[in-house]
Length: 294
Image (cartoon, rainbow, N blue to C red):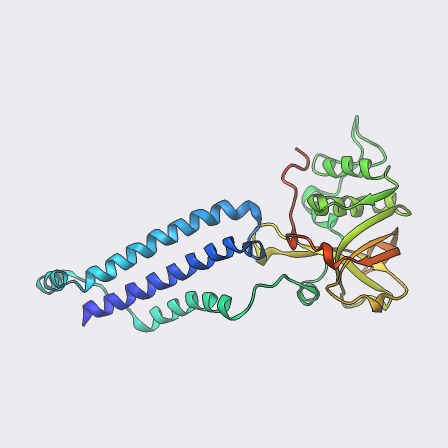
């Protein structure tokens, strides 16, 4: 009886490990892994899959070994030296906690985080606030620095980017510099007031916005879906109600400053806007540029 109990535990562990490994491999093959993991973490996920496969094979091996006739006799002859205790209740809870995520992936389809999650998490309309909190408040101009865009060591890359963007007739927000560009616009918002900007993103809304306001942005990801943050710029448009949540749009307008949530927020006063459903990005999320400031 004890052998079969050991066998059952080994089989359950092997099945759970195999299910996780197969799910990750399937997600990689169907390009769905980007819904869960940032590209820079992919190499570690590959190592994780290898480890899971090795452990699963080991559990299958031990399970078969436990019920072999020779193994039964061996355990019977030295039962006094064997102390494999399994607490059924705690084991079932542990197995259930591991099995539930796998079952949920089979029940629910892979989906990109949208406006509902953005409203729950809260839109980040002032991305530079995080930078200033970590870098310190002092961004006074230093020797040899651009006085128009004062900076310190931490904010200098954003100042350099701002100095490049300010001279463009229409400031683009490229996908590979999405986070950095919006951070620079917010950090030097007073300098960019009145400048034209073009921004592509999804339509989001947040409690407290006026009827003629919504936000345009993307979810930013550092490591995995758990740390995603909806990064956006507020936008104003007379017929804002016509633009539904989660529409992917391309907007051009002038930057003006508005007060929202007790903060000064860069806002696009839209001059032209179009839905570009046929130009949806291959990757739904945006990431920090690893070469920025290098």
